[in-house]
Length: 195
Image (cartoon, rainbow, N blue to C red; front, side, top):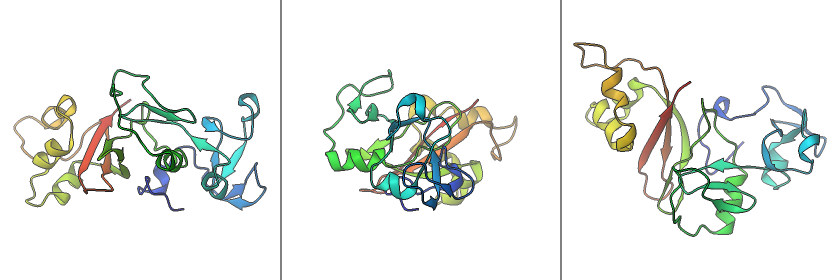
C-alpha cells in the first residue's frame, strides 16, 4: 500500500484488518479497513457495522476517512473548524489534495488523531518515536534539542518532565509521540498524547 500522506509503519494504520480479507464493496481479497468510522462509503451509517473496504476501493474513492488536522476537520464537506486547536483561517487547499488526504488512513492514537500541517499542505505521517529516536535523528546527538525544535511550545514540557531525577539522559516516557515531515520543505514536527 502506498499513500502520499502516510509513510509510517503499516501497523500504525487505524482500522486496518490484520490479514487480507474480502472487501465488502468489490468482493476482492486485499488489505482491508473497517468501515465503521469512514466519512464516505457506499453503506448507510447503520449498515457499516462489520463491513470492510480494500486498499483499491479506498484509492478509487469508494470510501474515505475523516481527519482532525491543524486546519480543521477534513471530511466530504472540506475543512471545518470544529475544535479550539483548529486554526481560524486555514489556507485554501486544492480539491485534489483534500481528496487524496481523505483517501489516507488515520493513524492509531490514544485520544484522536491530530494531523499536523506545513507549507499550506498536510504533513506526511512518519510514525511514532521514543526518546532514543530523537538522539539517533539529531545531527549532533542532542535529542532534547531536536524534540524542542519539532514540538510546539505548549507541548514541549514533556521532555524535561519525563527525565528521571538527577539524570540528563531520557530513555523512556509514558505518552506516544507522532512524527510528521513536510513534503515540501522537509521540516519535521510532532505532537503527543497519552491515555
